[in-house]
Image (tube, rainbow over the protein chains, first blue to last red):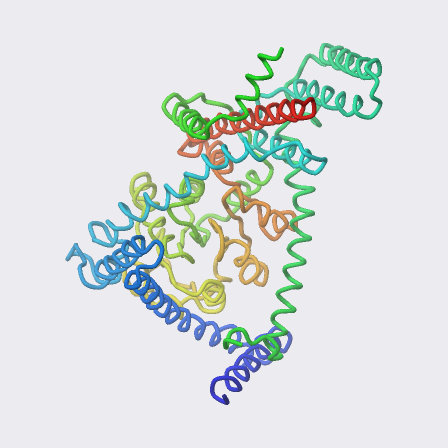
Length: 272
Length: 282
C-alpha cells in the first residue's frame, strides 16, 4: 500500500507544488527544475507512455481476436497494421541510402510508402465523409422548432454563405428583402391580422426598393445586411463572448482538478 | 395545391443516397470547371499578412506543423502560401512538429514548395526541419527553455550544432515570429499559453474552420496576430500574396457545396412545415 499509494501521491503532490510555486518564486533552482528538468522528465515519460500504449493496443486487439468477440475481424487489420508499421519502422528500411531514423520520412522508404499510400488515403477518406454526413444531417435535423433553433439556423446559414466567396456576390438588398419577409412572419404571428401583415410587408418592400434605387443598389450596402460583414460580426462578437465564457469555465475546472491532484484528493491515476 | 404539398412532403423523405450524390457532384464539378469567384480577405487574415510583411529581413521564423492527412486540405494550402511569403521576403524557417504526422506534412512542403519554387534556398541555411518530438506541451516548454536540449539532431539526423542557421538559436526568445498551423491539441492554444505569451515573441496561426471559435478570443486579445481560418483563410492569404494555389481552387467547390447545404436546409424545413400542417389538419 505504501509503495502503490502513498509514494505516488507524495511524488504528485511534491512535483505539483514545485511546478505551481515555480511561477511565483524567483529561486533559480526551482525555476530550472520547472522550466527544464521537469519538462525533460515529461518527454522521457511520454516516450515510454507511447511504448506502453502500443503494447496495450496489441494486447487488447489480440485478446479480441482470440476470444472472437464482436467485431474481431477488424482487430485482425489493427494487429496486422501494427505489425506492418513495426516492420517498416524497425526492420525493413526499403532504401539503403537513407539512415535509420531519417527513414521515417525519407524518400523511397517503406515507412514513407505506408504513410503515403495507406495512412493518408484512409485518414483523408474518413474526414471527407463528414461533408456527406453534414449535408444529410442538416437536411433532416436542422428544423425551425423553437426560437433557439431558429437563431442557430439563421446564424449557421449566414456563416456558411458569408465565409465563402459566393457570399460576396449575394447582394445586401436581397438579404434585406428576405429579412422583411421573415419579420412579416413574426408580425403575422404576433398580431394575427392579415391587413397589418400585408401593410408591413408591402410597406417594407416598397421602402427598400425606393432606398435601393436612391442608393444605386450597391452589393455591399447597407453593410448590416451584407453576408461577409454579418458573418464577421457573428464570429467576432457573440462567438468570442461565448468562447471566452467557456474558456473561463474550463480554466476554473482545470485549477480545481489540479488542486485536487496536488492535495491528494483526486486519486483516479492510481486506480482509486 | 394538394399535389404541390404532396410533392414537398415527398422531398422531405428524400433518400440520403441522393443527397450524397448531389454533394459529390457539386464538389467535383467546380474542381474541374472553376468559377473564379472573387476572394475578399478578412481582417484576421490581413493581420497575419501584415505581421509577416513587417518582419525585419532574415528574421528567424518558427513554423510549427500540428496537423495530418485528414486536415491537410484545410491547412496545407495556407502553410504553402505562408512559406512562399516568408521565403520571398528572405526569412529563415525553422520547422517543428508537435504531431508525428506533421513531419510528413513538412517533408511534403519542402518537396512541393521550397525545393521546386525556391531552388536557390538551401537546407540548413535558409530552412531546417527539426522534426517531431513526443510530449505535447512539454515540447513547447522545452523549446522555450532550451531548444538544443530537446533537438540534438534534426529530422535528417544531422547534428544541430553543424547546422549553420542554428547558430545563436538556443531558446524560443531567439525567434522573431512563430506560426502555428494547428488542427487540434497540442497546437495554437498551447503555443500561446506556454511560449508566445510568456516570452513576448509574436505569433500568428492557421487553424481548421472548426477551431476558429477556440482561438478567436486570443486573436481579439492581441495575443495572436491574426488567424487563417480554414480553407477560406488559405484562399484569402493566397490572394494577398498574389499567388493563387490549392486554397483558391478549392473555394469554388466549397462555395457551391455550402449553397447546396443551405438549400437542403430550406427544403427540409418547408417539408417539415407542410408535414406539421397536414398532421394538425388530420
